[in-house]
Image (cartoon, rainbow, N blue to C red; front, side):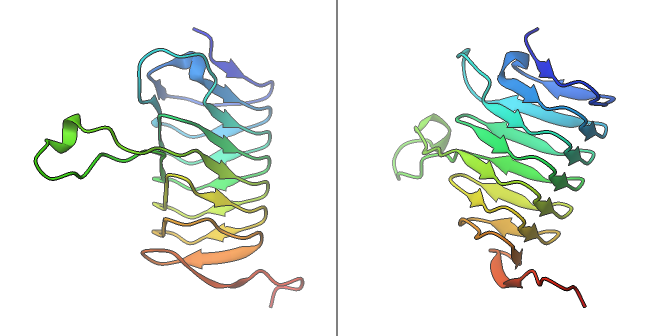
Amino acid sequence: MGMRIGRGTSFTSLHVTWPHQVNIGENCRLEHDIYFHFDGIYSPGPSIRIGNDCFIGSACEFNISRQIVIGNDCLIASGCRFVDHNHGTEVGTLMRVQKGNAAPIEIGDDVWIGANAIILAGVTIGAGAIIAAGAVVTRSVPPNAIMAGVPATMRKFRSQHPS
C-alpha cells in the first residue's frame, strides 16, 4: 500500500488512512492503536515521517494535512495528539465548511513527549526538549527546554548534571 517501514521496526495494530503518506524509520517500537490520519484527498507523500530508534505509545493520533517530521531517538508516550491544521472561525459561515489554516509540525532528535500531550499546527520542538504529560504546545520550543501546562510554558532547561 506504499507505507514505508524501516528494518527492525515493530508494531501491532495501526490505523492508517493513506499508507503512502507514512514513512517510519528503523528500529522503532510502536504500541497498539496508533492512528495515522492524513486529512485530505490523495496527494504524493510521505507527509508523516518518523526517524530511527523512536518509541510511540498506544493510542497516539497523527492528524496531518501538511506534514509532521519526527527526528531520531524520540520518545512519545501514550495518548499524544499531533494536529497540524485548524478550522476557519468566520462568523456567518459554518465552521465545518470553512478553509482553515495549516502549518507543519517538526520534532527534533532526542525529544521526550509525555502522555496525553497535544502538539498543534506550526510548532517546532527543538532537539533534546521535554514536553510534560498533558501539555498543550501552541508555540515552538527551544532545544533542551522543559515545557508544561495548558498552554505549555517553559519551566527550565535541562541541566548537564541531573540532580
